[in-house]
Length: 434
Image (tube, rainbow, N blue to C red):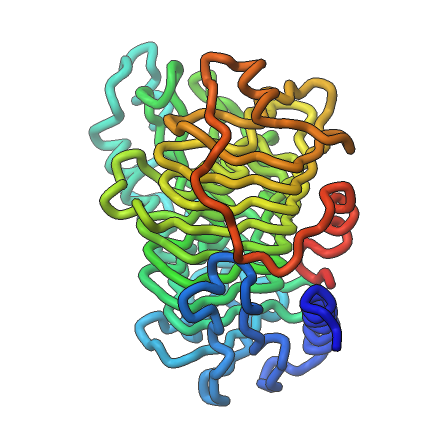
C-alpha cells in the first residue's frame, strides 16, 4: 500500500489532468469532477484541523456552476446561502465590467468631480501640509472608490469550492472576499491585477507619507477552514514598478495578494505562486486587534513560490504560522524583507530555500515588527545551510529576536529536504501545475 506522501502526490497529479480535461467541456455542462470535489487531505496544515475543509464537495447539480463572466460568478457565489456550491471558472473573468459585460475604466467610476490632477493639486504637501486630506476632492475620491468596490469585490460564502478549468482560468481586477464564512476551497486560478483606481494619500504614513490602496486579490476575513491551493497571484499587466510617483512616493495601486485578517483562522495555502508584488501576504492587520485575533490566525504556508516579492512573505501578528518548504526568490532591486515578526506572532519557518542576488543582505530576510521570537531551522540560502535568525541578529542587533516561537507544528503531510525545494516547487506550484 502506498505511503502518505505517494498518495498526496497522486492526488495532486490527478488534479492537474482532470482540470485540463474539463477545459473542453461546454459552459452549459456541469460534469462532476472528483478533483474539484476533493477535500483537503488529513493533516495538511491548519485548515485540516477541527473537522477539516471540504468546501463545496457535496454540491448537488443545482448548485454546480460553470461561470464565464462577472455577472455569472456573482450570481453563483450567492454568499447568503450556505448550501454547498461548486463553481468552475472558465476563461478570463474581468471584474471591472458593468451588468452587460462592458469593460469599465477608472474614468467610468469617477464621480462628484474627482480627477487625479485636481486631487494632486489639492493635497500637495507643499501647500496642504501634513494634515490628512479632507474636503471636496477627498470626498469625491472616496465616493468614486465606493463605485469601483461595488464591482470588483465579490464575496464568497460558506461551503464553497471555486476552481479554475484548465491552465488559464483567470480573475482579472477582482478582489475575492471570503468574509464571515466557514469551509471554503479556492484552487487553480490566476489572480491578476486587483488594482485600485483611487489610492488615498496619507501624509502620516511613514516619514514621507504614502499612497494606500484597497483590494487584495484574495482576503480571508473573519473566516475559518479555508484552503488556497495551486493558484497564481500576480500584478500582471500593471506592475507597481511601472507606476508613476507623486509627492515623491510611488503611486501604489495594489494592496495584498493574499491577506488573512480580522479573526480568521485555520487556513492552509499550498502550492501557490506569489509573484511580482510589493505588500504580498499579511496575517493580522493591526497591533490593536488582540481581542479578535489572539488565539486565532493559525495559518500554514507550504510549497509556495514567492518570486520577486518586496515584503510581507508573510508579515505576521498574533497567529501560530507554519512556513515550510517554500522557495523565496528575492528581486534584484527594492527588496525589503520576507518574514515580518509582528506583535505576539509565533512563526515557525523550517526547510525553506532562499535564492537572493548579491545586492540583498541576508540579515534583512527577517524583520522585527514588535514581535519577540521565531523558530527558524533547517533553511538554506543560495543552496547552502543558513541560520537565518543568527544572520539577522548579527546584522541588525537593534532588532534582536529570540529563537523559540513556543510551539511545534504537527499538521504536515510531507516535508521535502530543503535542497530539493526549489525544483519541487518550480515543477508543482501555481495554477495549471501538477
